[in-house]
Length: 62
Image (cartoon, rainbow, N blue to C red; front, side):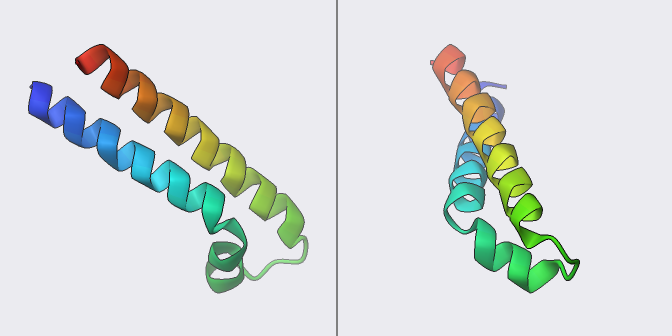
């Protein structure tokens, strides 16, 4: 169970950093609606939340 939680926490951390760092290229590639700035902002917020969740999982798992 501990290894599974470490894996989930690590994946969450990596996805969070990826969403924050590459939000604009991801939005350009996968979404084609008008207001891209709102989509970039939402993706960065999602990345930040994933980062926080992954950090909490990793912190309490050790």
